[in-house]
Image 1 (cartoon, rainbow, N blue to C red):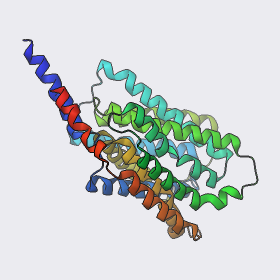
Image 2 (cartoon, rainbow, N blue to C red):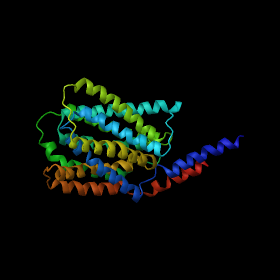
Image 3 (cartoon, one colour):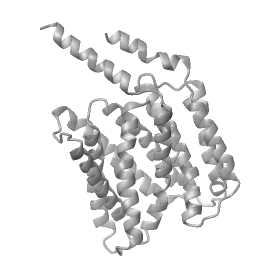
Image 4 (cartoon, one colour):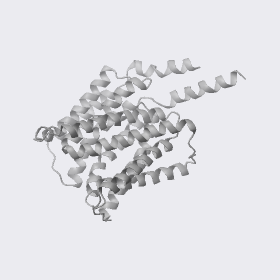
Length: 326
């Protein structure tokens, strides 16, 4: 009787170490980059949808569609919806963190410029690396990885520096709120990665959706009662993109990556989102782009490559952990 429990616990911990929290493989990196490209189109779709619906109404409609996608995924894969007693507190914490982060982001964007919003919000991979350094085994920020992440972030600053520097108004409040949102988003990525080791993926996603829907519905009823709401083809396309593709399939893909790979390696590729976002704005909305885009793109590529580089100590870390657990 004594040997049976001891045999089961180490096997579970070993399987987690072997399957999850690994440096990105080529296929996983390509998938993470694909998600970053899709996410880059999210602001463009949101901007198109705002012509026919308020931001809060657009938000909860998006999360409703995303929740439907997650439900279909969970049913198709025969997942259980029963929440265990030990899962209530972590899921509640995740949902609360998600809601506060979104509130900081939405309010902050009203107080600052678009250029400031992009530069400040896109710091979240840096904060993910900081939190992962302290809370995720084997995901420590080495000098080369820190340098690579900073180089990639400089690419984002290069793209939006002109709009950032030309701003004449005082955007301090908005920038601070967006910085808080970026810090919380970085922490949420790590929390998702940690909780994903013991809680099913669909439960994590539904917790975020439920909190987001309830919060945005209440806020919309309070602040958007007099705003017009028109169902147009443009709105439907925008909701399908932001709801089904991003809040649904995109969130599923992102949590899958965070469950299996080191979170700082996954999120650093998100620094490419503003680059693709500018390209989408030029292609779809006809906005002009300048030479700074090319400089920024080169810095993001170089920095991301440096941040993904595997050192000797990193590849050897999982092996002693597995041996020790045996």
